[in-house]
Amino acid sequence: MAKSPLTTVAGGHPLSDLLFSPRAAFIWNHTRNSVAWMNPAARAAFALRLEDFSASIPPSLVRRFAKFTERKEGGFAKVKIPGGPGLSCSIEILKLADGQDGLIVAEAGEMEERQSPPTPSASRKPAAGPRKTVRGKQAGSARQRRKAPKTPPTLTAEEMRAFKAVGRKVLRLCEEKKHSDEPEVAAPLPAPASPSPIESGALRSAKALTDVLAAFDLVLFLGESLDIVGVQGRPARLGWRKSRLAGKTAGDLLAPSDRAILRRMLKRLHGQTAHASKDTLVVCGENGNAMPCRAVLRRWEEGGAAFFLAFISLELPARLKRSPLARNAAAARLAA
Image 1: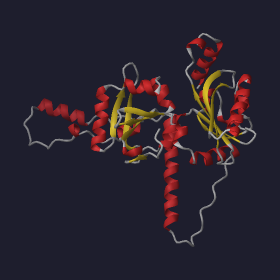
Image 2: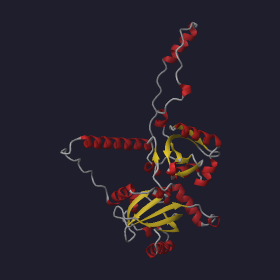
Image 3: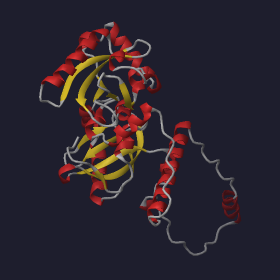
Image 4: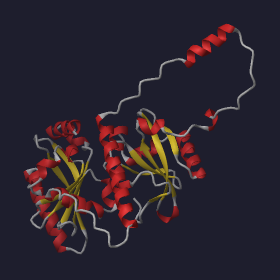
């Protein structure tokens, strides 16, 4: 990821929303002709790592991305790689670090596809003058005009939740805009209901997250005693429900043999000038399923936390593919 903040020209898809979105999304670097980042949903949808996904983009799709970048205008496109699924995606213009051009490619829902602007070839032609037609053809065109309208498609439960969330956000922004335009003597907005401690800690920490954490499946915000005070990401991918993590410590999620590794990571963090301590840990789910993960431990003094511990799931090495650990990891991925 880039070191400096990324900005969208059209402002369609905030990167913080795409990180944990159930729909696949990735960032295309036009300058380097490669995929710069992809969210966990994209990795699961295409079943490819970042390097393999960049190599699998067909030349025709690369040329299509180049046309969006040259026009500096977003739109919609079909993303299809050999041997993978075909997804209808929305395209937004993105300005990467160091002035490089890029695109945000995100899986589009049914409502977004229906609201997409018509292509120039589909524009209406000028009406021609009256033509003489036989009586049978006139009757046939009249029957076509009298066809009953199609039944509007229904939304899935996931799309309905996303639609309601967007509506609440729009209402909140309108309320803030209205109060910002009023004189200073206006009464302040009522304070919102306070969320639970674990949710409030996660919300405060999420505002300060950098794009470095965007590549991880799960981020735990820990206190001084390594107790969990906030959660970000998709814990179900590692076999946990977010509500069951409240009141637990980081060691409760690890295999017994790996808790000593976590203590060594904490000791290295205290004993050296480096800002982060890295190692490989095995995360055990609620049902005992095991998942090998790359872990990063670092100081994080935001939202009442002292550390953050970030996990990203790993592919099993060949020497472990026939072990019980491999079967448990496969079961954990299916459950997620």
